[in-house]
Length: 358
Image 1 (cartoon, one colour):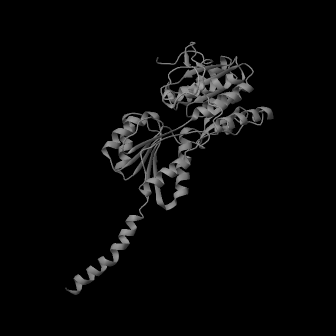
Image 2 (cartoon, one colour):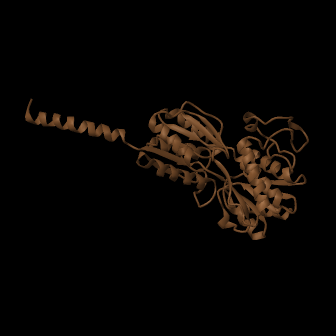
Image 3 (cartoon, one colour):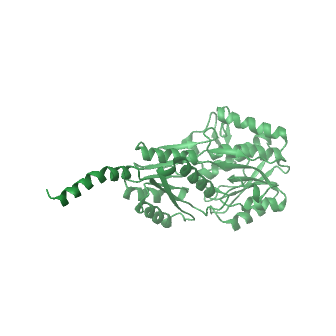
């Protein structure tokens, strides 16, 4: 063997373990797809906070990238595919309408793991997760029922899908648990993020007698409208107090950081599985927080007690007997099943009007 060949062989022998170690230590790249701008409050804000929490927890083991303000449909499919092609080995898609695009792309990239929120389908390399937002909604309804003087609440809602209807109905049941005369009025805006439409809907509801408003949309517009009109609001997704310091009674908030960290670590460990996770207040994925100082101490105590009842299982927001707002019995006794919750397509007693698109 010549000296030149020998030197090359020795270099290879020395470098190969180093190269192997480097390859083994390569960070997991995690890609996120967001439905709305990140901003500083709302649904997407909470997911981006969770992304940063995951980065902090896992350090050099992960890198992340995100694309914000991605419409549901063809654009989502393109962005999800781009992230997979660019080296993301875990892709997290954060809107209900991303479900089918996620499944379609996942088939094309079997070595990539995908997590979808908040749909109901899985595949060999697709997990899903959701939060029991309705538990926080029930507590918010209790608070609204205690604080409302007109017995009317307004609800600005995005789309009539089960996730949103669960929230409307839980809020109404919570409100009527302390005020049997309470009524919840709903306006659909047919968008997850449209501050103009959200504001107009809130103003309409306030004009119809609501003295508490809430929303299942992404912007701060509803809270701002309540602040402007001197009424109360329950913020959703994240704390929006700075947009309505007097208006915000409390916020129903979402927390994904621990879940994302656990899932990314599982991919790194090689133990990841396509699970379905649905966590609530007990699991720390949903909270009712930052209750306004204007709320009396006895009301705070009452709401806190109901929260503990939910955590212990003593209270569930959808326990029978339960009728819809047309008088039909939907549940005679016991607790509604998760399967029935995921097919919810009606309003319960106390909600005015009909479900849109029915």
